[in-house]
Amino acid sequence: MSIRVQCCAAAVMLVLLYFYRRQKRIGLRTGRAYWRMFCVAFLSISFDIISCAAITNMEMLPKILVELACKTYLASLDCLSGFVLQYIGADIFKDKTTYRRVMVFYSAFIFVGITTIFLLPISYHTGEGELYTYGPSVIATYAFAGATIIGIFLSIIISRHKMNKDRRYGVMIGIGCIMTAAVIQFLNNQLLMIAFAEAMCMVVLFLWLENPGYYIDVRTGMFNQNAFNLYTTQLYQNNSGFSLIQIIYEPGSCRSQSIDELLTEVVSYLKSIPKILTFKNVGNEIIAIIENTESSAEVLQKLRGRFEEGWGKSRDVEINPYWIYVPDANIVSSTGELVNMLRYVRVNSSELAETHLAEVGQELADSINEEKLIAELIANALVDDRVEVFYQPIYSTKERAFTAAEALVRIRDEFGNIVPPNKFIGVAESNGMIIKLGETVFRKVCRFLSENAPHSIGLRYIEVNLSMIQCADDRLAGDYIAIMKEHGITPDMINLEITESASLEAKATLLQNMRRLIDFGVSFSLDDFGTGHSNLNYIIDMPVEIVKFDREMTNAYFENSKAKYIMDAAMAMIHGMDLNIVSEGVETEDQLRVMEDLNINYIQGFLFSKPLPENEFLNFLREKNHVI
Image (cartoon, rainbow, N blue to C red; front, side, top):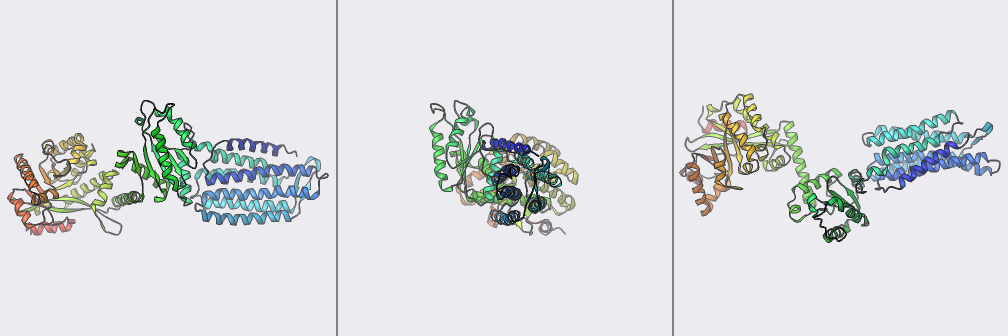
């Protein structure tokens, strides 16, 4: 058989080499493993051609030279199978130390195989135009290479959950090509198919996994988001320190000219800076990775200075981007956490909004991580029914009895401990979980009212808080009416508390919800009057029946003469509008007497009781309201 198949395989490898080397590469560990595997495959095909030429001309060459050429080719096949193991090992073994230990074992096995191939005898067949080798050395090659291939398939099967799905399938198809060719050649030595199968394996892996073009942003020529994710994941796996600079150029940050027209110039400059990698992220974002963390501050200063110089031919076009600087990206432990942190800073950082620069440190990372844990706690509490409602009694100064209560949400952790509301309410509001949490509380309040005959123990109604997010939900009224009907409670048993901030943020939707609920029979309170944007106009605008003075305002009445005059005037106007007042935070008998003298309608505070679980609250009402 001629060497046309081997020469064709070599030609395919040369074409593949051209396309592979002409593109810039990001330096991923799997990419480096592919390049080593490619070089060994190319050498194997070359040695196949050399060995065929040596056998053809064996009468003119020294016997030892022919034997060396043939055994070198056989050894290269064994070596190639080892490099395939190394390639999948780069994906399976994320830890660098484990990866190196496994590679040492593989290398030792391959070394034994190569040594055995060179020590065993080999024979040649050249009759009737046929050309191939056989004998113990060839059998040893098939044995060691076959064992390695079996090890490859077992590694893929055992560690399939650790491997990239596409890489798993790509490797199996590529190795399947080589294995099929090896079986055919083993059964028929005249069909020299392995070289072409090696080339096809490299082509499959290139097209499926290792094409550098997959990691390039077509528009800018920079590495893309996929490359950023893979590269930073590798850095975290290797425990490599690095810094990050995110440049956010909003469409309006460039005056007199479209940012797109200047992007080529900006990208060209960024690429010219040594020892940094730049990535075009989603939207209007560019990210620079600096592995030398000591020089990152200098790089940031250099970048900002260049942007301040202006762009365009005359450098008269300004771009004023936002900068997020992470001196040590190892304050988080994964790419996912890094991306979440950058997104959080972009949305929530007042420093970024004011100065266009936010430097991110460990304190913020810890805060974000804590917020994530709390979000998980809330989600699990909702699923596991660990959300509870505590009730703080409200005292009627006219009836001298406890006629109402405020429902307050509580969450228990997995150990049964109460989590303070100030730790989870803000998180629930920021991620939207407050809607589900608020609905859960409302359902529990309605169930409590339907099961405990509240009128018989003097309870007229329960106040339930609404957050800003809930007030902005146009489904609120419909959902809450449906829940009240489901539990069969009369709507006059419910008083919904809104805050001044809620009325500012979502006034139109809030008013729409309020009108529908009021028409159904629900009443409303304005909570925390005296905080935030305190203004009597809110009382005029909002159809509320009760105004609640918060604890700070109550205390201020006794501690600040100016606050006393303001509060006296406010109370006179509120009473003049025929509205009731609840004073929160009353803690002493003296405060109670003063509030009664001021004709405050209702009193709420630790003087009477802290918030109580259901059963304790019921017992409290029976005892204090003298219910037998």
